[in-house]
Amino acid sequence: MTAARVRRLALLGGESSGKTTLARALADALATTWVPEYGRQRWEELRETLSLDELVAVARTQIAWEDEHAARAAAQGHGWIVCDTTPLTTLQYALHDHGGAHATAAMTALRAMARRPYDLTVLCEPDFDFVQDGCRRDDGFRQAQHAWTLQQLAAHGVRAVAVRGSVAQRLQAVQQAVQQALGDAPVLSEAEPG
Image (cartoon, rainbow, N blue to C red):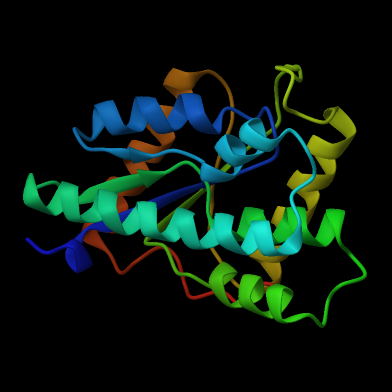
């Protein structure tokens, strides 16, 4: 198997919506690897709002990590990797934190990377209490992130699997979608985020 044949399962959702917990559980259930969120790691290193150039580097690193994990999964004979985030989320932070900079080369690069297609997209609902871990903003921001992501998915015809409830309930819903994706055409169409 080659890395190009490894399917990519992407998790989207606001802060504190269970993406990392679900990514780990899915990787275990699918006996594969999961790709951590580089943007969070970078923010923890700097502890400040990331510049547009830094956000471009975050998106590029996230893609590189996906490719590395896909190669590792292929070498081990695994058909999927689980991505804790995508460059679409990086674009969202760029628009929120640097909204007036829409015409810059950095923003153009981010928009291009945010169009990266995935074989299955999962949207984690913010259906439990917000958990502040020292890195996150607040529940209002989480709700705004969720609404923006819904708008982007709808605007670009991406059929995402929305998951809610316990980790076990979310895991079951995604496993059913994975089985459907294996039997049908890819669940995700190529999107062009706005």
